[in-house]
Length: 107
Image 1 (tube, rainbow, N blue to C red):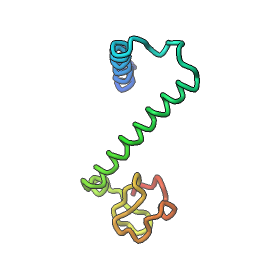
Image 2 (cartoon, rainbow, N blue to C red):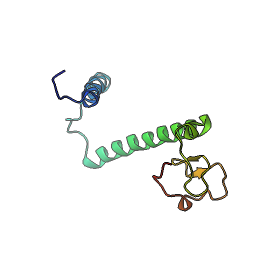
Image 3 (tube, helix red, strand yellow):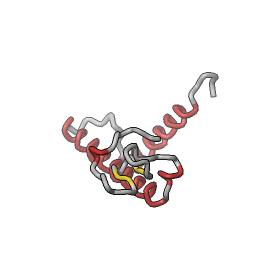
């Protein structure tokens, strides 16, 4: 790898190349295709984003169930109990509304 290259960026580029090859093999087309309207492209993007949200929810549940939030030192800024910022609740559950938490505060 050339000096000054970010290895993480290069890893993402390589992953994109692999995914592109898989997509072309599977569907026989790439994203330069012209048979979809802009609205159809938006629908595809929305479906991908929804899948992503489902994956994040699953990971959030795993983090909450595993006690990883405690390991990472995430605490509710209001009551100092273990808090999952993704699920918007803390262990004490006395103030489980999202508005009770200062989002983004990881203590």
